[in-house]
Length: 387
Image 1 (spheres, rainbow, N blue to C red):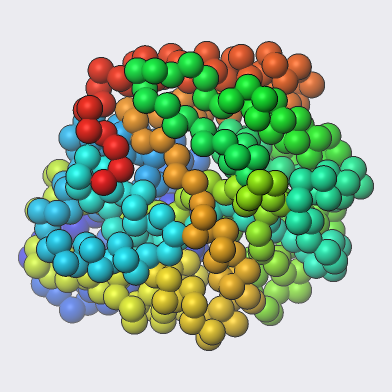
Image 2 (cartoon, rainbow, N blue to C red):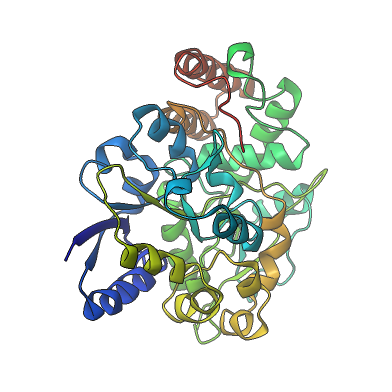
């Protein structure tokens, strides 16, 4: 008998399905699995190498992989599953949900949960969804709009706006970094983000995505968030103030930064056949389309996103956001990226809220990125590219 410990994040979408499945797994024996939780902020920023010292299974986001590989704290899943299995799960996953966990020729996490930044709207307050940034800015002038700025999300919102304007942030090789964003695009994206924030409801700048969606469902002062990570739990048809999720405003094309979660196995773990079979089941079509949605989860399998029954139970969440996640942008994954993301977000948020000149804010962001890239270049292998 082996007792395994896992760590996930403390929201029904992050914990309910895993804990319910683990209870069934442990009840069958001989092994047991217990999932502990930490807050969204811990999930977004806790050093992965420290968490891996205490847990066998980790629910993580793909930008943590650079630090994880530098610390050698995760097991490559190619050692635990066959190429056919990993290939089938990758082919089945929506958008780049699986590809984001491939690095240096190996797979480091199984795509459990799929999410990207989408637009959130209260239809009773905002009957028509803005389709471009000009329309979103006109709506924002009325005071019912807030961008997502707390934690890392000011930076992520900026990236998604820049992607919609045609940029590929952070795409230069680490040793050749000059700027994180092209100058003209970066200035335009900062201006859009600042104008979205100018008339936002009081206090909204300090709310994480869950807080923004809670505010949308609790009161009537926030009707539209143009870029926020989608949470299926807020679109249920029986909610009195339900949120409708759809594509964010577009420019050259839709811009969105993929999030979601994968399950990784730490170096400390010695997974048994039963535990590996349990992980296989979580990726199965039945679990993805039935068990996970029934337990407040947000599946990664495209078949679940295309299932009419799953979509109807979620108030059209999946059909409304499928095109957005299929084209979403994958963040850099180099050692030290997570601290840079936190620093960059503080630079963007503070600059916007203080009314600082966009050029000065962009200069500070570029300088932070050059420091991070210079520090990461010796740590990242020459092959540190998506596989």
